[in-house]
Image (cartoon, rainbow, N blue to C red; front, side, top):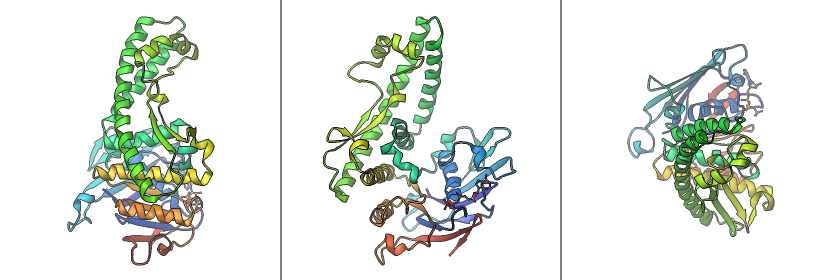
Length: 375
Ligand SMILES: Nc1ncnc2c1ncn2[C@@H]1O[C@H](COP(=O)(O)OP(=O)(O)OP(=O)(O)O)[C@@H](O)[C@H]1O
């Protein structure tokens, strides 16, 4: 499904006028501070339940307001094609946040829903912005987030298991921090914790395998040369040659001293190595960026293989990627029939991204003082 209608209220500097988008490409341009990123952030709220730029909801509510809302209209998706009408709205989704009351309201097709996953499953949103390169350059947390996004869209029940595991981990940590260790209680938490950890790990491994296959196919197609010797490996967060129960039992003292759980899904990672060494140490910045872009496309391939359309938000990538990489990205996303939003300061030149006569359907918008005008 693609986001074909957007309306916001009290969201940063955005005007509350409804806007219609293309289910294919949308090119947004405007001066610094005009509101381009704010549009993408509003879309991110529908697909991720949060901004990709700031962690506090407070930061996106228009100055002087208490509550923002974002409504979206989704079309019928790729199944609606070919020949069938894609213009109609199949689902209506909405999110509102009252920052005074600290209350979030979620709606799908007019009904209130409680869990964010019920909203997010309708619109898989993938962000490529200057911060995305931390997937390779940063710590394991960024890579877990990257993998879990795909796991959730492959297997939506993952969100519930993950939340349960977070709760049990926190209770287990409290027990570890208690002055006198309650071994019997800890064993109860261990049983629950290891069961959930194994389920999380299986789901991650299944999605990772799909991702790796897609990545290898992509790398053969684009033939960037330096990918020979590149190895992607899923690390579940513990040494699987031993059972997690045994590992926990053998590291009681260490975990008690640290006061928290040291083995399990919160330590998982996608290990990226080139000739046996971490790519963050060996690849140039340019190579790291290309790698991240290829990983993002491969994720799109996984979802599109399951008949799901991904909405890609490309914020300010002109500064990060050269023309060749931008064109490669645009052509691959076109081939996957993703929905794409691209922001830029300069007036976009579609001829730079696509060869003459090969451009996808696109709509172009000028953003000024939070208002979008279609050209
Ligand atoms: N909570 C808020 N309420 C109202 N306006 C805000 C709020 N937060 C930020 N703004 C303003 O919204 C405007 C749009 O910001 P945004 O980041 O979307 O611009 P942009 O077009 O992406 O700019 P750039 O090209 O510099 O990245 C800015 O002028 C900013 O100061």
